[in-house]
Image 1 (tube, rainbow, N blue to C red):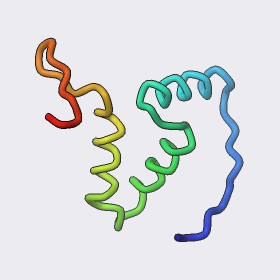
Image 2: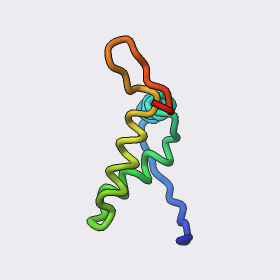
Image 3: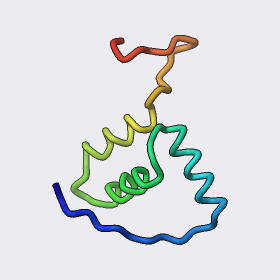
Length: 73
């Protein structure tokens, strides 16, 4: 595993709270969303980044009409 480095960011408190709500709806954290965003900046992230983003954005939200698909489906 690669070494992890912490950083400090500053943003409007209301903006941060709104972003946390988005993260909660996506069943993730604001930190993970930021890491995903950073991966998107890296040219070598490629397909793995796209897969993680797709899974994060669609988690629990894949439906056809009124049918919600189970994990097995």
